[in-house]
Length: 229
Image (cartoon, rainbow, N blue to C red; front, side, top):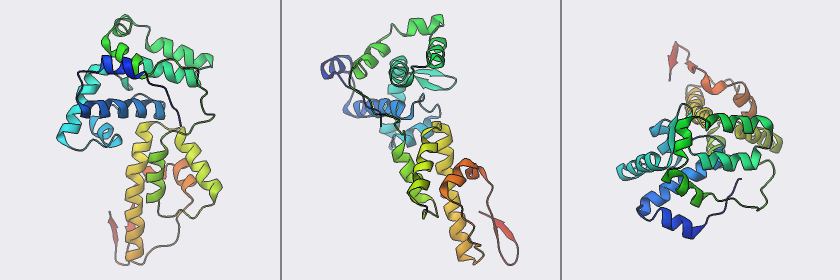
């Protein structure tokens, strides 16, 4: 898991106008950004689900924080300081540096870095010399949700470890699709058992993930005909 330090005094100075709810939302969005190693999900409904924003007030707080502290781009909501922090952690390769430079080389983004958004982000994610963990595996909480919903989890420790490694390499978009797909798959298996047509063909979770079975259209065959869930 990634971690970062926080200068409390700077943070309080730059975010004094936020409500208690908005403070919680801002911290949750920053955590998600660093943990997933990706820009924030551009779909508001999906993003709110990822940070557990459910009430109207919580969803409105997410909208307010996104508008003030993040920049909407083609691949999601970005924040330069978050990108810099990720590059500091993982960006020792030339390709990572080149990618970051390209994202923030335009005149528009050059102006953006002078705004309060970056100043506030700096308070959230200052430079640190603290040691960082090796080979972090992001989105473990979401992985546990997948693992708990998968209808066959009898694989050995190696199977779960391999699944978690795969999970850590995926985008938030992919993980959202997996979580949606596995819940449908669970209902599908339950329906098969109920109709007594289950053939026992549930593969190990790692094969389900690698073969992108979460995108399959599921059909339950009964004795009379076929029905779709």
